[in-house]
Length: 77
Image (cartoon, rainbow, N blue to C red; front, side, top):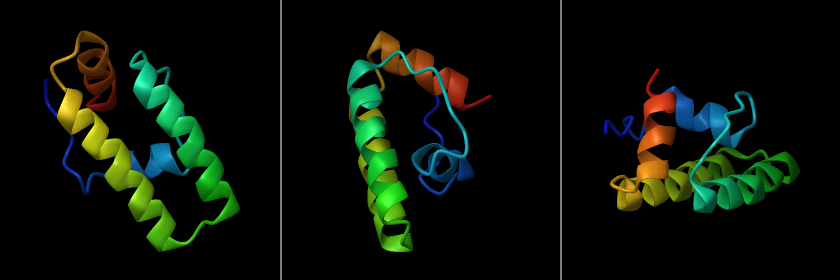
């Protein structure tokens, strides 16, 4: 499955809560909940970038899992 580029705007939109997605990958759901709360408390560019890095790495390391592939397919649209 296609993993959107690390610099794709979709990662920023998801981490900042501008775009919501129904994720199937449980680890990503848990991480994203923590990241969006963190970004709401501290919306600095550094914090957003750190969140994007964490979410991207999670999907990069697990892109062969069926639920992660489903999420990536939805994010790529």
